[in-house]
Length: 91
Image (cartoon, rainbow, N blue to C red; front, top):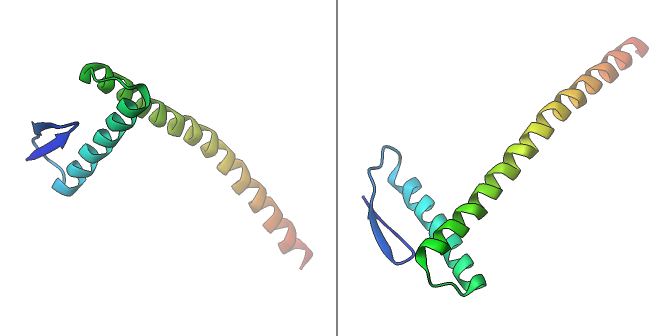
């Protein structure tokens, strides 16, 4: 299939849903355009690298949040379980 990113057409072998691949292309295109507008850079390689850094930052931020929320969720669930047991014993 073909997708367009930053005015360039790419042939992509899509093992996944074509709509999903188009969505990925649109996301990368939007990031590159945002970077180009913000930096006034016309060098496509620089724009691509800066967009990749932005996307990597989003990914790592989500991973860190997930690492924090995973253990926190377990602690909250444990506390809820303790409160439920306490409530059962008072009834």
